Structures are given as C-alpha cells and as structure tokens.
Image (cartoon, rainbow, N blue to C red; front, side, top):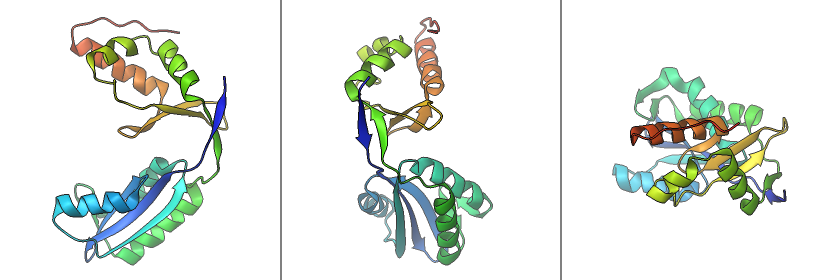
Length: 179
C-alpha cells in the first residue's frame, strides 16, 4: 500500500461576535468560514484568531469546547471574555495540537480498502448518499486507521460501519458484518 505525505490543514479559530459572545470552530479555510458565519448570521466578527494548522483540529476543538461547556449559552456560542477564551484556546492547542507532517494512505489504495472494509458502501453510493463524499485516511502512531470527511470530521471505521448499517436498515435492507 502506497503512502502520501499529508500536511496539517485544520485551523482552530476563535471569533467574537459581540462583546463576550465567542465561537470556536475548525476549518481548512478559517477566513472564508468566518465570512460565511458573518453573512448568514448578519453580524461582523469584532475579533478573531486562528491557531494551527493541525492534523487533529477537531480533537483540539472538542477539548476546548469541553473546557468551555459551562459558558455555553446559545447553540455554538459561549459567554465569556475574548481574552479568557483565547487563553484557554492557546493552552489546549499547545497541549493537544499536532502540526506534524504525516504519511497517509494513497487515495487509490484507500478506496480499495474502504470497499473491502465496508461492503455496504457500494449500495449506498449507488443511491447517491455517499457518492460525492471524499474520504481520506491516515494511520496514527498506534497503527490505527482513521478516516476523515469534510462533513463528519475524523472518525474510526466502526463509526462509518454503524452509519452504513443504520442507513441500510432505514431503507428496509439487511446488513452483514465483514470481519
């Protein structure tokens, strides 16, 4: 199986909508993401900061949100000062963020591997549900295969298998487990 080099590309951003209204997120293009939030939300970010890029931006975001959960007030927004939020974001990112360049499975080999590991995938992609989904994969330092899509972030094969089972069952189909 061939491997390619993957540079980190996930930026963790913090933005302030108005005084003490903070949002944390992850994006490959944080400037465009913030502009999109401004357009759809009808506001302008008063301040923002992006850290990274990281290989594990979603993990960094998750740990930050866990630390900020007591400040959450509406959906993805948190009520605390920008300065306090930045301090927490920087601390968690320093502890957790991985900016290493890593080897990933070649996309052609990965497609074959996904087809082998997830026999239900073919029936779902024929229905169009996963047809346009780009799946990338990488092996971590413990030799565990992780998959990633822009829509779902990073996940294990068990997550995708569970999704495929649920999707197939919801259509009245049957599933079997490939071991």
